[in-house]
Image (cartoon, rainbow over the protein chains, first blue to last red):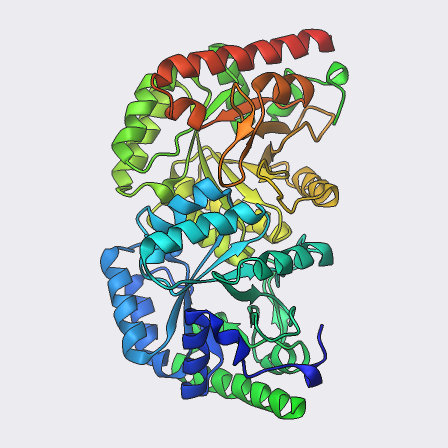
Length: 264
Length: 264
């Protein structure tokens, strides 16, 4: 990990990609580095959550393929909510196939991901063909879409080692036209140009029965140098999601501004 | 790789899992170790291909999420074709998320994968949580579903090294109630109990523009010890898919029987 004190945290340099520019502008305008994972199976529940927490977040992350009643209208409604509340849509598909296949997975099927998502992600495991395939799909869509490579995972006993992470870093550096950063557990790039979003965040550390492991916002932002926290069950599973989102927004923003003031 | 001459190729021991039993019974009844990858975007085209090649194959592999007009009726029609022509359905989703997420991805969404697929696959990368999550989804479905772990890939510059493959092998051995084998480029398990299906197969070696690399049936079955060949563009992209499937069926079967006779 790069020491917090030498980090460039305010991302001017990161803004080369239009989606990174928008992400940082939204973050600063809303004082929120909070991405909420809306892991819900019903489209109406996701839309309700959007309305509750939309003003508080910079990114809404979804798994379109877990939504039982997903239709083209779901994508339109999400897009409208994102534009109204000023947040980005992140489809957490974790593309992980050869280039020829991910072209179709990203652009086609029932979900037509690159027709509505601002952010997508991929495992680096297939090699650079996965990035080339996603580039082809994004270019054909005519929309600005940013890619995050999954360079580290939060789950227990995951098979990613430091050599794998290094290779993801190299892949990202070679694809700056598409890749704006990483899903990771710590800062990977000391230039500050490649952003880091960290999943597995809760206000109390812990885990679930299927191997997920949680860290706190202060830990992932302050100690490990992430830019954005991704919070799922801590918000959508709360009795009052709006109140929970406020708490995470405040904790994430405090950790970021604190780390940034230390870095000056 | 395990030398061909010491391999147990006829899989009596592999048949502990009901899906492995059915797979080997179909293989022997149809004299076919051919899996066809139906990478087509239109449901009607997939159904047409099913009718053309159904009698020649033991497995049809699909990417449900690349089919633009997929509905519940597509799953029913595929299921009916598989039962009529006696082949298994393999959804090549390459699950690659934490356990909590893959439960929903496998059982829910528009595709409801474990409600119709006989075979599914996953990357080992998230650790054993991905297997535990898929087990939960499969058990809840009430159907017999077999899992193949992606232990090696065929694409150029992929990030899998031998340590990663070994960890997938260990994961599979610990999950014999669900995992019947691997997507890999060579035999990984010298007992013959864990089956190997190899993608990236064409009658002429070569590659595509997005990093896919091809090997021949004789090479992957005869030299590397795979059990099943997965052929995509070589068949669905042929002028006469039925004729092409016959050629691959013959080549795959000849390679398997030849390797087996050498092994006795």
